[in-house]
Image (cartoon, rainbow, N blue to C red; front, side):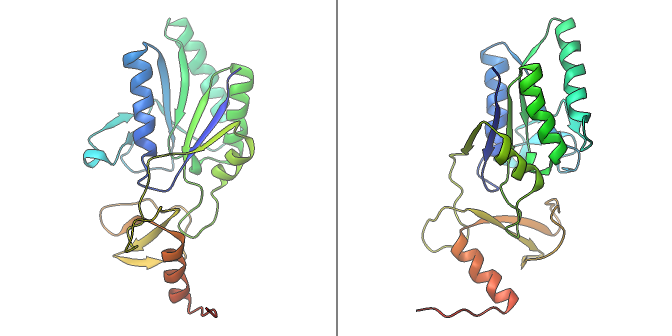
Length: 217
């Protein structure tokens, strides 16, 4: 029986790189076909899934972009599955990048894909946004996924004096940390950037920005 998988981590931990590696292994080394998808809201790199390695040179065009409507992704995958089988090229796996941007309805439809179509789905996602708030897609993936793992490539905090694991990411605009705004704000080369950060360094910057003072021993 197929499963719904969740692989999560902060930004720069290698999620997209791992997705592209899995797709490569399935197709080049095992002769199997896969579907690679990402949500339409992710406008970075247009229709491509890209790795941060080599400045985005490592990339693959998504087979299609997903829409948030209830039933849309199930119907689309169903149609793709029937067409692929008719052409003698059935796919063995579905890989989804930036799955945190998917809707609740999308995640339930992915659960239906593994249940009724018997095709495994691996979703790669952030757990929370830059303000510590869970994304809708991530929340329902944590609730419904049968297999959940943190991506093991270690993202190091960019602000700690000693190496510490980053567990959240900091949004900056023109180099200045921000702690409020829209949940979805895609990174670009002009002003919006995201940096991996450990909880301690994040909280210090958050409290300073908010003017919050707490007693410390």
